[in-house]
Amino acid sequence: MFSGIVAALGKVKFVEMKNSCNVAINIEKVYLSEFMDKDNPIKIGSSISCSGICLTLKEKDDNLLFFDVSEETISKTNFSEWKVGTYINLERSLRIGDEIGGHFVSGHIDYVAKVKNIIKIDNSRVIRFSLKKKLRKFLTEKGSITLNGVSLTVNNVKNSFFEVNIIPFTWNKTNFCFLKNGSTVNLEVDLLARYLLNLK
Image (cartoon, rainbow, N blue to C red):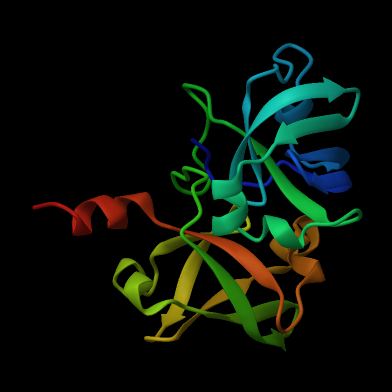
């Protein structure tokens, strides 16, 4: 479980999708000291949110993190677009007592959304994303959504698209600053909305 607050930015060092699928991510920038906490180091087997995808750490070497990636993950995310040099939003899983700065995020991707338009307003950006029709019921204005592992608020939602506002801090501290028209992001709907709408 995560909160959607990006703690570090990593860069893909290598990615391989042959007989086995694996990726190594080099930790480039650390924004929250808890990510590299010496008193609570990242352990093998830990869950790490990698641009919204919950991956299990299989190995580490200094600033390098190594993960295996399943066929299911590849088919449901934008992982197949990752290449050497791709920037990845990183967050460690929550511990009891941690501050929930965003909202509860599972790291299970529902949809790969595509950027339809980016409008700069002062220093902020309003980004319009594509939306699959069957997910429309999970989105509401002022509700939460996770994009590339970042907890955001939905500003506007229609049947085929939705919009979010990205403030300068978030734009500069995440891989959103590399987005352009046609870029894809990993989308996870709000857990509470999912469970409430599925109550019988």
